[in-house]
Image (cartoon, rainbow, N blue to C red; front, side):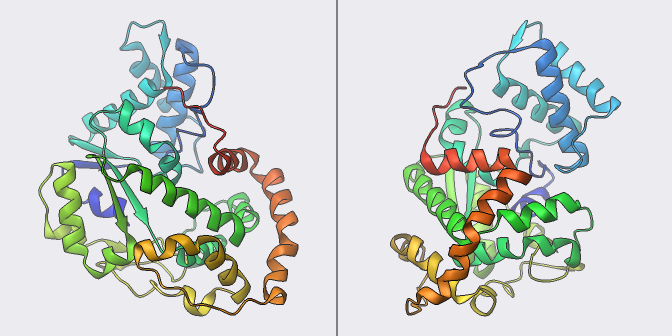
Length: 322
């Protein structure tokens, strides 16, 4: 939703999830330079993701042609991966006659500090939501094709089923919050609480526009109501709605809720999220505990790359190289 809001500004070229860092290029990889041929391959994959989406990223002839042009504009024999990303995004700004470009990949928060260091004009907007709402959304993510996202492949539906577990989701949220704490005070970083955004959208978006360096327009708030895991897409309805903000209260199983509140307890108050305070009951948590081995097996089987990225994020196995 934040990406769609900013994308309504004429100065912004809004891209979707690109997953360049951690997927196409792992900042923890020891290979710091790419040959021309390798740079073209990864630039083509990035161009394909921009043009066709993350689920249809097999480069077509036109994508490869654009990638080759981008790389060959430089006379360098080798390329730094972060330069490839930068140049591809610059091309999108040029084509869209804009001034700014967005990349809404959620896992960029893992690399935010280094991204801000590498890209001197970059601004990081970190969206923070009640962890119970995040977990509930992830629990229902596999249902997206049923509520409007017809482009979601069957394999992604299966991955969504296996990827979900309240323990993993809660710890990933907790990791992101720790990174938020470290980045507070950085002049080009801002964290936005989703619940505050839907309650006071004009104030929040005005603040973000000021940080980015562009004028606020009332029309930015007139976004389509799509992309929710809780209700059917309704593109004819516009505006920022708070209807699904507390859907987790009636939809999240008590065992999952208990786990999430236990794991995130020390950080809930920081953002004004009040605990429900369910009485601990091992029987309610038991289903989640029994399903955890299946969760790990499913990730290893259907999405090992994503599992490895999240494992490194959770365990701090990272030494970034840009």
